[in-house]
Image 1 (cartoon, rainbow, N blue to C red):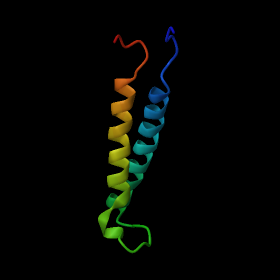
Image 2 (cartoon, rainbow, N blue to C red):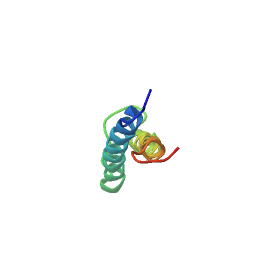
Image 3 (cartoon, one colour):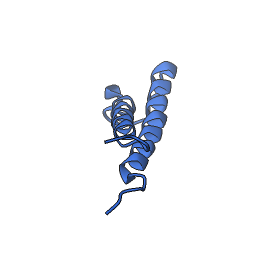
Length: 71
């Protein structure tokens, strides 16, 4: 079977990159402004960690499965 379409993993990587950038941006904004959400473990800065992980994973999938890549 001939594979001529775009991999679904590219789109998943694109979405993870967008969401990761948004969450990381909000987390950095929280750090700069000094106002954190009223949650128990706010001192761990979860938006920074989760945003960074989503961004890294999204970039990995986006680059690994980009359209037009040979191989």
